Each structure stands twice: as structure tokens, then as C-alpha cells.
Image 1 (cartoon, rainbow, N blue to C red):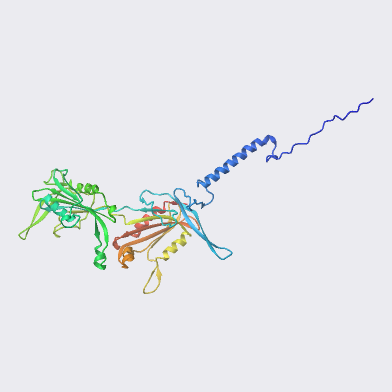
Image 2: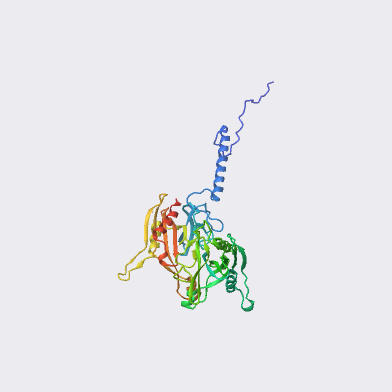
Length: 449
């Protein structure tokens, strides 16, 4: 009997289908591919994080923070460009974008003003610097006094009392000390007070404050009935900005310590003279000796008392730089178009011919960083007192100024603008155009693409 046998030949099982993303890569190379992929993903994630944090960028368009302020790198000059479009309903829509215009190297030569911003939307894209400020202690004088030091000091102090009538008291600082040369002296520092604007009152009948002041006086005993007097005045726009008493006393003592009762050996001095009138006759007396100082600017034209005889020495505090405003920012439009726009706003018309022209100065050049620039400076401009105009409707001259603008080519459609202004109370005291240009060039040379 035969036995049936089933076939025992091998059968091939169906292969499991590979659906992985690496199915097209041979198995022996998939590990390498996985590593490369992870590296690429890490790089992309890092890029987007750094881009979001403004560490790296693509192009010159700047992203803004949640409150609409552009992310800025240190020294980056930014320009703002606004575009307008019309939708299908005829409605106009505007959008603002910020772009990199260039870089500003910065400077510590002038005082940076972090509070200043010309932008009303608080998008700070600019730098504004103040020049050297005026010394608030602007007046210092040494002269002779005809009388006893303590008595003259007490007499003058009566002019600086607070209150009225019997209730008037002195509320300032007062003391007695001895100077470096062994001379006793009495001094006081008055309370701050406001000084009226005499011109506004005289010409327009307007009573208003001009500035705030504080004064210190010292009377040095140099003889029985003669003395030396030191006066120090400070001023500021507001009382809170006046120097502390200690600052006035320190300045006052600089001069007090230069006063001698007798002519000293080995020290160059000048006689402190007093003119005394007795029975209609003038007598010149020596009330002490003054060693002099070159720490402050001596005013040679100043005189006191007898105009034919200069009695005493008057010094001025450190004068402010008349170039008071220096400003760097980005501007929409090419340097040429921005330059022409500003220039056209300062044209003057010839009364005889009716022709308009620009009477100021112009320059073109290339900065040390190889950037072309255009610069202009206006003729002197008279500026009215804004408070007088606003409050009283009166046009009264405040100061004279010159405006200068430089436009540096950093892009085809945007540029860097540098404004430098000068002002003085007298027109002929304004700096020359060349001096203003030299200051402008300092900032022009700090700009790069």
C-alpha cells in the first residue's frame, strides 16, 4: 500500500513592507542618515530661535516686539518706511516696517541723552547728544570792602530775608571760619529765589520768571575797618537744578584762600583796593592782597564802583558749547532726495528779483568709511520765545540758531541723517559754518553700512 506524501519543498514568505521615511536608503546607511537629519533639525531650530531673538537675521527687514518696537542691535541705525495700499472697497490701509539703514560707532565725547526721542510712538531709533553744559556757578568776584567784615556781612544778609516785616528771618546757611592764610571770615549762602524777566516786563508789561538763582558771600577780615569780599552766583532754569550749598561754599573758599592781609613773600599778588570818599575827597586804600587764579575766565571788561579804576576781579564760569544739539537717525528716502527736501525748506526770496535761492553753506564729500554724504548749514535763524507767544501772544526774540544737516548714503532708498545745531543769544556770537561742519563730520565718520 502506497503512502501519500505531501510536497516538502521550501516556500518563500511574503516580505514585510518597509514604510519608514528611510525606506529608500540601504539599511547599512540609515544610521548615518538619521544622524544627519537630527543635526539639520537642530540647526533649523537654533536658527529660528536666534532669528526670533534678533541675534541673526535674513535681509534688512527688522522684526518688532509685541508692542511694535523694532528689535535693535547695539549701534544699529534704523529707518521707518510706511506704505499705503487700497483694498477692493477703496479703503486705504497703511503699514509700517523698519529696516536697517547702517551702523553708528557711538561716542563718549559728548553727553548722551537717553530720554530724548523724536518718535511719538516710542520706537527709539536714534541717538541724541548734548554738548558741554554751562557752569551753573557763572559769576565769581573778588573786591575790597569799606568797613568791618562781620558788619558788612550782616548788613548784606538783611537783603536776603524770607518773610515780611518783623517776621522776616534768614533761612540760608551762615558760618564763620578761618582761611588758609589765618584770616577770619564770615559768610552766608542765601535761599534760592527767582529772578524776573526784566525785558519782558519793560517792553511788554509781562511779569514772569526768567531764571532761579542762589548766591554766596564771604567777608574776610584783612584790617580793622577794611575787608575783602568774595561773591559767588549760581543760576538754573529751575530751582531744583541749582547747585547745593556745599558746591557754592567750595567755590567761594577757592577765592577766600587766595586772600592775604599783608603782602606775602614768594607769592605774586595784586593789591585789593577800596576807594573811600571823605568830605568830597576820594582816597584809595589797600584792603588786602589777592593771589589771583587762572582756573576761571577773567572778565577784563568788568569794573565795579569807579569806572575809571578797575576795582576787583570778576570771573565767568565755564561757558556752554554753542553747538548744543547732535542727533543721529535713519531716514526714509535717498540721501539726495532728503538733502534737497531740507534745503528747499530754507530758501529765501530776493525782494528785487523775486528769485529764490539757498543762502547757507553746502558741502559734499566721502567719509573715512567710504560713504558719500551731502551737508548743509542754514544762515542764522531768529527763534522767538515760545512761552511768550503761547501765553501772551507776544513775539519776543529768544535766541539765534544755525541748523545743519548731513545725509549719508547707506542704501538706495534710505539714508542716515545727522543734525547739528548751534545757538547763542547774540547773532554775531554764533560759530562759523566751518566749525559746525567739523562737528558734523565727527559723526559722519562714525557711520558705516
